[in-house]
Amino acid sequence: MHKLDKNTFPISTVLPTKILQFGGGNFLRAFVDWMVQVLNEETDFNAGVAIVKPTERGDYKTLKVQDGRFTVVLDGIRSGKPFQEKRLVSCINQIINPYTEWEQYLKLAQTPSLRFVISNTTEAGIKFDSGDGFEDSPPKEFPAKLTLFLYHRFRYFNADPDKGCIVLPCELIVDNGKALQKTLLQYAEHWQLGSQFMDWIRTANHFSNTLVDRIVSGYPTDRAIELEKELGYTDSSMVAGEYYHNWVIQAPSLVQRELPFSKTRLNVQFVDDLLPYREMKVRVLNGAHTAMVPIAYLAGERLVDEAMNQAEIGRFVNELLLEEVIRTLRFPQEIKERFVADVLDRFRNPLLKHQLMSIALNSTSKFVARLLPALKDYLALEGKLPKRIVLAFSALLLFYKGECNGERIELKDDADVLSFFKESWAQYDLGKRDLHETINHILQNRDIWGENLNDVPGLSKMIVIFIDLIMQYGMLGSLRRGA
Image: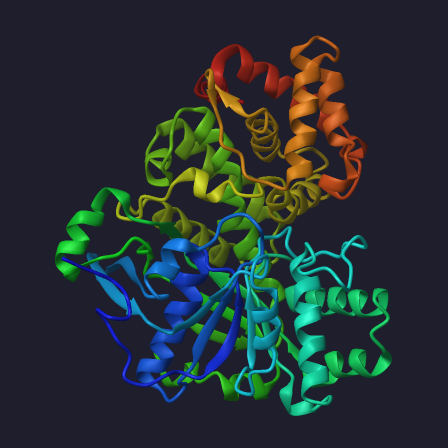
């Protein structure tokens, strides 16, 4: 059987590089790159993508070996019957690691055809770090890398306003486009890059707030051999997910004109106000994911659909959404309940094989963005804490202890975050802090939570009760006892 690469599937014409994409992980490849492939096949978009690694970890070696080619396998339900789409994505022109190919990265800024910048660096990715230096090659944070890229482009094209970019961040934070622009301007001011460059950032570049929605499960390990037989080639970068997809974009009309989604059946909406859509999607779908991971993992589950089919966990997620989360949303009750029902159906899709650990990346910042606002709003509305959200938070803090039933949990988060939790729980294990002192110590970390969460009335006390319950009776035992 042939291995997937440019020799097996050559492209007759070279696509001009129009898109700079920060991140080549499962989601961006199964969502954005899949959409670009559809646009190329069904319209005259004719766009190539250059993928840039936003972090030092990993090297995208498998994708490079396949010359950027990979297959997206999507499973869905249509008229009550399962269906599947398999699409070969061949729009990736380059894969650049700025940690080893910095000059090549900057040279990409000189590409005349480049027009779009897309990113997905998780909720923790859009931030300013004063320690990043102008001479760093590269600086640590993604916005710093992008600032240097755009500054190089600004200088190379002599501040030409037509060489600005349309920026479409996919990070799940409020006003992600505005937040990214603000952070770039912070770096420009910090590095004293001049008022002309800052004006060019503001006027020649268009930062859109966006909201993305598709469940992507990743490499389909359990059915890869079967799929490769159907495809007729081997593909180590294959990525699977659900067919359902939605991209909501708040942007000026020129962005809509340059992205011909209206000529396809892709579920992309251009809106004037993104906030209501974002709030419901982030709190319900993403919030349920973030709540489910530590609860289900500590209960011994490893897949989303299996967790949802476990009676206590399924009941917990259902009640968390219907009795707590949607009470904080300003939508008609019927719309909220229908959205919850659709989300739970998507979670139960047995074809996705969505690993809990693939959702667990940067769970602390995800909690801050997805569930903490719901917790606070519920407290303000009801005058009491939402016990299921607090239980999920308690399980998350215990999850970050890094072990479950004697087995190590492969946590993935910022190194400082992991170091902090390791030290905090070590002090508990050594008997230097009791459980109450340990939780107070964790909750007061403003760098992680953005505030001292000990100030939330009753929160630390409830967390201690829940963690003590989990330690005594296990996760499922705690759920059965009405936790």
